[in-house]
Image (cartoon, rainbow, N blue to C red; front, top):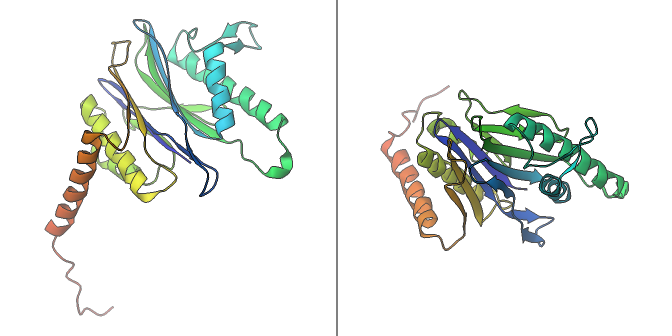
Amino acid sequence: MTYCCGILVRDGLVLVADTRTNAGLDNISTFRKLHVFEKPGERVLMLATAGNLSVSQGVVNFLAEGFENPETGEVESAMTAQTMLQAAQLVGRAVRRSRKEADSSADQSTGVSFEVSLLLGGQIAGGAPRLFMIYTAGNFIECTPDTNYLQIGEHKYGKPILDRAVHYDSDIFDALKIGLISMDSTIRSNLSVGLPIDIALLRRDALQLEVSTRIDASDDYFRDLRNRWSKALRAAHMAIPAPPYRGREP
């Protein structure tokens, strides 16, 4: 399992992804789930993945190396898409192809799931920053200013903070902070999500990443954020009056 979230604000995009994968309580590994395809001044594409690791790694390889479009016969890659919409369509085709290859080579008796979900965010010169969620079937939805974030993986624990705190006019670094709080809430409540965390921040029209880094357990800012958020929650619930229902009968 995993947790990734993407946040679209007026000033750009933020993506946050954990790195934990597990196939049982005693088989936990770390794999990068946030991948970047960048040509400064021309394009930045960020892809976050959740689900079957074999399928998602196949998608990343197809996007990096390119593969043939059966309709045109042309070899397409993340670096050849002319718009973000075309990039989302390309990811959808890569998902279908990678899943088909994984499914054809698998022993069906194992019951392995080849389900995946992905977040694709970025900007290509001449267009606006855009954020998509791509499903296993290769279809996708797009983030909008009305609902300006998307999540994949173990999303339920991090959703409340995003619902309450982030909006399209949020400062982009506030969006990053809220994304990290959302990740911390998920890590605290689900053992299948864990550090390190990869983060990427793309400012509108910059066409190169402003932030691209990994946060681990030694990161001073993230430790402070976790402590401050816990204290703030305790202070908030203590400040609310006790329920006035003692002694009342139904």
